[in-house]
Length: 435
Image (tube, rainbow, N blue to C red; front, side):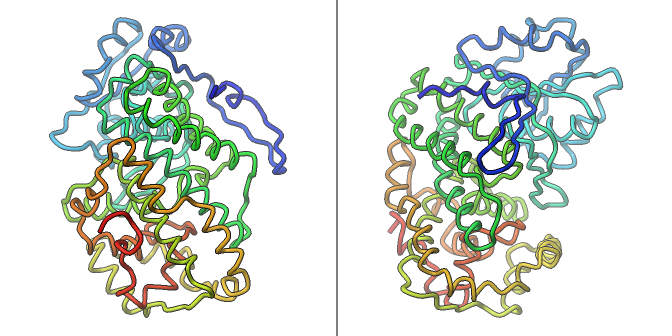
């Protein structure tokens, strides 16, 4: 499969959906030796600030310093003993060191470094670029910056990078778990696309068939490249990297994260936030997305097995008690978010009853939990690892309350109104490969 990313950058696209799509990224270079393009790409900038962490700097910072020379005005290398968190502290560290003369921020890294650079450059009204160090997630090209603000996961609409450079000689040597994470993030699109189509049916949400088809086609090709990706085949890693970047571009084209983020991402946010609240570990994003893709596929199967909708929702008092137990010091923020969204005040039961057969048809379009599990087993995922990391109670809490960290409809809302009042039926072991 040949992915022509240039066809989607800095060009207006008149789409059959009725919208005019545009992505403002100037250039994307994904190839062996791509770092050598940096001096030409950044020729108009003379005060560049390098940003990395102690791990990503070791990958290629010296090479970039030698290529850009005196145009590097300074650098920030985040020093952390544990995971770098894109929170207020990290933002302040970067914002405080760049000067008025700084005209470009160049990140070296993947998800967190990219989000911090994106957010700060947007705040400071300047361009930024990213040198990818791993094919681990699809956020390189998106305009959304996923930040931790006041303990909550908040995705800010900012701007995409001006340039993305991914040297295949660098990214193919990323830790294998980072490569698996990128594969997981891509396969998760089966879930996000299904949620997008479901929300169109339930809420009349905007939907672009061309973007849907493009993302699905890319996802199918990555699925079929699993063996070569696991072997670090250069062509397969290049395809994976381009696929991740292209899907990020579709988020800008659609002006919504729908093509790349749904219930599987909402559960990932749940495990990350609850982990931060309780000082507990969590998987890197793409690994979490992979396990959650299996989980949400099973939830769809459980729903699709119902001949007609049977609503059994817990009481508001039970929900509030659960929020305080789970979210602790950020529970009030969750309450405020959902109060503002009005999701619990809106009654969707009549729509569910009217469209139940159509809903089942959409849910069945997603691969089954067993099929998803086989995709991830093919690249070396330990299918029991999610339960080992989080335990059954936390996973079951995610299934019911992971939706509450976002103002976004997904299959999690449908599942909640059917099963939150029947906790004995909220058991992922019934439909996943984990027994």
